[in-house]
Length: 289
Image 1: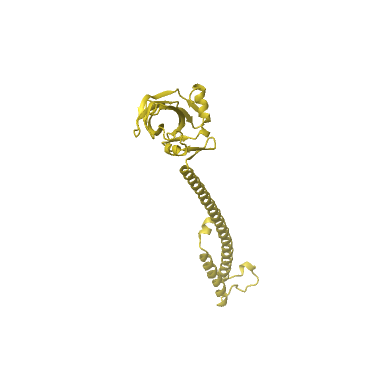
Image 2 (image 1 turned 90 degrees about the vertical axis):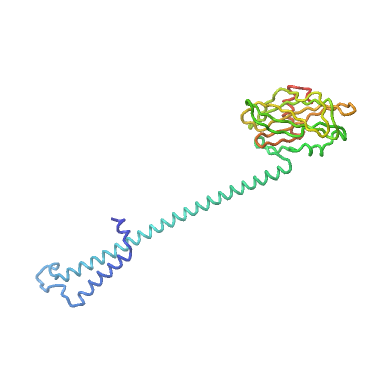
């Protein structure tokens, strides 16, 4: 019943009040008798039919006025509730948009930071919260450190991921010489798996090149197979190079490289950050230096 009364437009109540008020006013003005004048009758029996009709109109008009006021108050309450709900919804929407904007700004800051540090050769280790300096190009390393002057030098030129085969990761390691050709080249590698939780696992030493000559300007390569392991973050490649120059002078050096299977990138690890890897290698092969 309440819903029905609330659904009736206010103009209907106003019109009914005007109509019944007008009727109850006009009938007496027309001179119509409202009572029959017989005083011996009880007061409620002394009204004529016109008088009873006028009374009914007055009652209806008064009732409609009361109903209109109640309905108006109820509608005002509903409007207030609706405004409050809309205000709450709008506030939540604004808060959500602000949160999304803050997240996007944070993401943009992080992406910009990562791009910036990548251009300087710095790699972020999220597990150890340590900024570890990697020089991602062997040529840059040689520009910074000239170990042998114009003498020949063997270095790792590139790492290329081929595919997984029989649960092993196949990598092509390309080598080259700087300045001059090198003879009696021997290259040994002790692969180390670095997992996402920073755990390290070392594999046995592997001699991939033995007593060969690498001519200056050539790019020989060797394929190695690394057993596949779950949660692998980086593949650390400690490499020992041994060679002779054109005059027969012997050289030897150990470099530490990294390869990221996920990013498909490699680089040289600076000496300051090779300690945990050197400890693993030297614990098994003390002369690997």
